[in-house]
Length: 124
Image 1 (cartoon, rainbow, N blue to C red):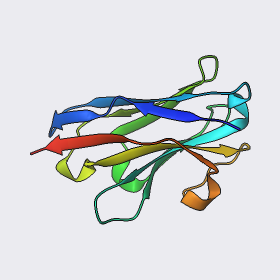
Image 2: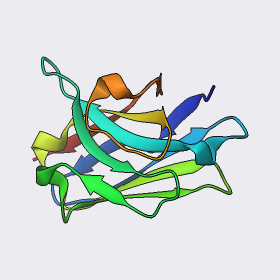
Image 3: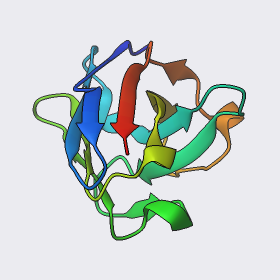
């Protein structure tokens, strides 16, 4: 099993940046591919970005490409989401998720472990 704790959310003006962190417990973190998702009020949880267990491949939702960067440090059991050029529509609770194995997915049902989320609010 793995436990996930997100941090780094907050209030930022449009055009600003935030870096989210996700700390994972457990000794087998490198066995998990990781994803970031977000959920805005009244909307379904949506895929943001994912990274394979080795960190060699990354994937992004179209609206995040060029603005967001996912990365991981397996030695520190950490996953990061660097968010630049933030827009008010990026306002949501951001969740870190883990999926056992080398493959990533955009479907929330493929991820077995979730953090509690961190709020990101972008003001116009």
